[in-house]
Length: 245
Image 1 (cartoon, one colour):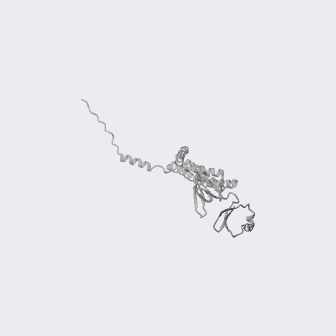
Image 2 (cartoon, helix red, strand yellow):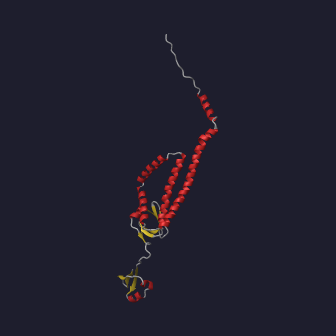
Image 3 (cartoon, one colour):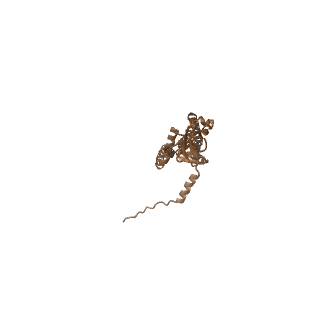
């Protein structure tokens, strides 16, 4: 005769066990929580915020000092604004990485992530990279300076500022035009302010009854001092047309 033995699992009171855990957590020493969690992590967060605020201020200050040094050495305000923009961006990126490192984030993986993101963004924004490179080339060759009247990209205006990607022009009717640096660099650039003097052509008519030689003799003195070229450019029904250059 065999006996059948059955084993039954002990009856566990889930509610009672849960209450025990809750009571244990509620009776934890608050000082240990403060010392193990709040103070260490709170201090790291406060230091990260302080690093970001102070670093942002220093980045702006250093970028402005670099811009002033560039302006003092090159006398080029376009180069100054470009250096201020690019140096502030790079310094601010370093500040952000330092702040995240203070919190405890692995910055090496973050730098790798930024590099991969930069590569992806660069491939999707090839025109922007082209404009950036064109801006650097324009600053190297210096075909114009701030305040010069130039004609490029189908627009005529005064060069106000060169950013990382665009050139700002102010037209004669006080409009602001933004031209991509790549378009400016690839197009012809006419600088009307590069030379102290320019030739201006005049066209005028003298009637057939007038004495042309006498008119030439009566030119103002400052006209006669110039190397003038006077030629007949055409005739009309009642006058002869001449050009002065």
